[in-house]
Amino acid sequence: MNAPDFSSAADGPSTLFQDGNRLRGIVPPLITPLSARDELDHAGLERLIDHVINAGVSGVFILGTTGEAPSLSYRLRRELITETMRLVAQRVPVLVGVTDTAFVESVALARHAANAGADAAVLTTPYYFPAGQTELTAYVQKITPEIPLPLMLYNMPGLTKVWFEIETLRKLSDIDSIVGVKDSSGDLDYFGQLCKLREEVRNDWSILIGPEAMLPEAHRLGGDGGVAGGANAVPKFFVDCYQGLIDNDEAKTEVAIEAIRRFQDVYDVGKYASRHIKATKCAASLLGICSDLPADPFHRFFEPERERVAEVLRDLGVL
Image (cartoon, rainbow, N blue to C red; front, side):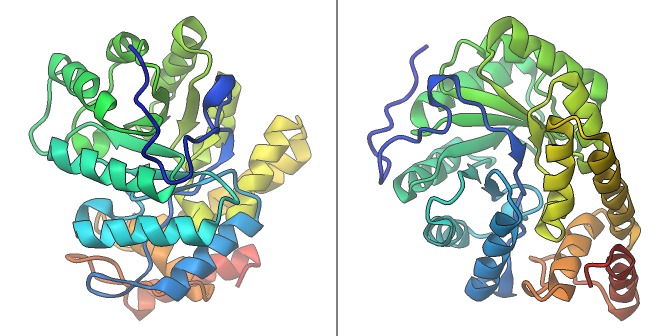
């Protein structure tokens, strides 16, 4: 199956995934800084982007789970894409989440991202009504010709209730514009199967791990890096860990992964499922990057929880 026509993109097609290139390294799934309901915090977004790029990340991913994409208006999503592209200014690749319950809205957002100059779109399984694997296969086959960007598939069964099963990915591997998979299942056996599938059918695919503390295990299985939410706050730990793995520097890797594991304590603050996003935004706020305001219906941490996050950051020596 032929790849889509990239001619609509503002600056022409991305070169990121051409000629067998793979995206490797740490790609933070950026939080979405908000100044009020449905209002983007432009200054906070600029500080956030500079914070992660200056730490050496390999790209940024907006409108993912950590970015609260399903809770944002379509207007705000488009504003975020446009502003992110302006602020990144081609320093690193930009991946844009386009998942929606409506087929046409995913396509429309992908086209806006392409026109803004994004490097790739990211698509998870449609949620709310769980799709069967036959339906999912047909869905991806139908939507890829409509998306004018390289497309990374996103396996997030914990929230979408549906897996990209390995045999489904095998069937989809003949679609040239699909350039890889981000796996947030937390199942290392599945991740290993993904890496083996790449060896068998698409050695140009990028395979990235979502659960950030699994970065060393994913690397040993053949992964290309991680999409680490904690890199919004402490990107250097993740960049150092990845570089240590690439260089086979066990000492550097161990220091970095130990810091990452200690940072994980912030995710134990709070009692609701939204605590992961709240904790990440709270950490960014404590570091002076942006406000900790989440999108509705969620609430920011109150002072006792905020102090627990601050204790973790102080223990790590970053606050």
